Image 1 (cartoon, one colour):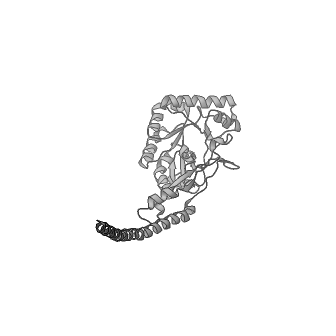
Image 2: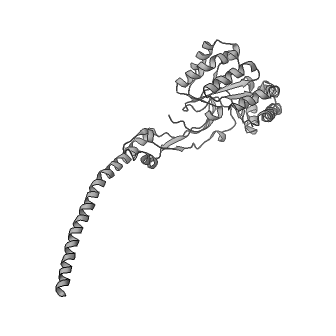
Image 3: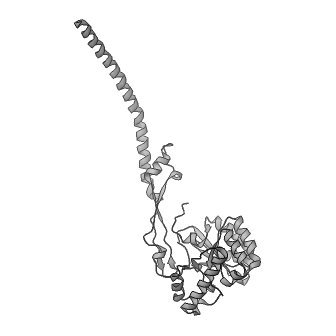
Length: 315
């Protein structure tokens, strides 16, 4: 019996030695395989961390500019290291197209500023807007709407209240086409010469008419001919409306040729520009080529509200 126990112990010890060797060899092999993978992962992670600052942008606060008045803020972006690593892990190499960003909001927003007119968007935002003031020119609206639709462009139409009262179906057509609508006063007066009460009446009456016709509440006010005084802007602000001006004027009411109009705009347009136009023969004939040229400059075309929001456009 004793011999059997000794023999069993010897066999068990031998089995343990053999298997421990196999296990150790297996573990060692696994470590050898894992080591390059771990090194590769660490290398990718370090590469993302090293390159991240190249792609990051700080946020820019909204401010009152001495020349351009209220300028909206613009969000910054920071590379999300963990999410970017996860996105690139399968290929194991750094790829800027697979970077993941998180947005950093400005500390000061447009609504934090005192009442002030707005002439342009943020100068770093590669977007422009069309401001189309409508108090006449019905015969050109359909062509302009068709051109905008063909290019998948949304514009901001500032409607005169008296015009909407007479043309509610056209106002509905503009909204149905996906465009933004703003307030262009009721009877196209010189707003700078109106009292605060008269200015309020012009704006409120037009808001009511536009909402009745389109079911849209306006939050943008475009004073006729760009005429206003500080009190006009304060009245609009009290009604929770921003006073919108423009950066580039087509001067289309002077009936320029398409070449003159296009050269005038393209000579001045830049990031954040707001382009003033009307439903005129000149603009209707120029719009198609104008949109094409603007897009060729890698500028997006959006509504005024799109332009004024803080969201950063990632190229």
